[in-house]
Length: 156
Image (cartoon, rainbow, N blue to C red):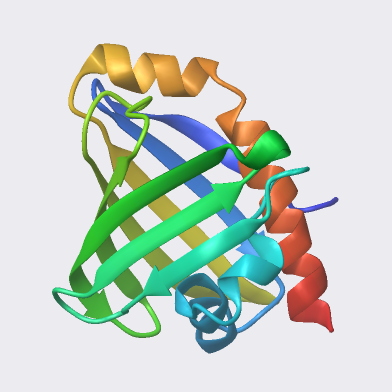
């Protein structure tokens, strides 16, 4: 069975995501936090990542921008709140075009399991309505597409 992202409600304002990767926590941590590696897999069809800052330490800056058709951009800015490589990362995210209802809090855990690493991620939104809007969007499909790019990169 192919690995696919599993998404469920964690609470009224939280979405929880889980996915298996055939890689070590160290390999996955590097792919998730390295500005040199993120643009290689974290893109959507027609929207390559054109700016990437990721400082994976407490207080570190996160800035990511994707450029799409006709030069349109989508971006987010955040701060690292906690970094415990290669197992735990907590950071904030705020999209330039605030489609998620305000700043989100992302808690990421990389858990070693047989055959690789289980990614467990919780995203806390400002309101239940924001959580529901994100859950109803194409975000899950786009995340899985990006994670499939990551699978290919990790296998190389």
